[in-house]
Amino acid sequence: MNIQRAKEIYASEDMISVHLDGEPVWIEHVDSDNGMATVQVGSRPTNTHTVGVERLEEQGS
Image (cartoon, rainbow, N blue to C red; front, side):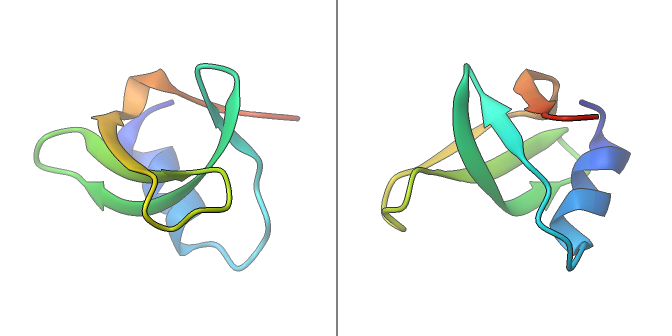
């Protein structure tokens, strides 16, 4: 995924399926300057990771 699409998904009111290494995630924050995104893995709000947006995959597109 590219940084622009990550920002669009983050800002969207629609539920858009995104996966990291095959696991569903929610985008919590996008750092445009560094090409990074903070994502929540699963349903636990404390389970977050900061990864390069290129590792994120939009599902069903």
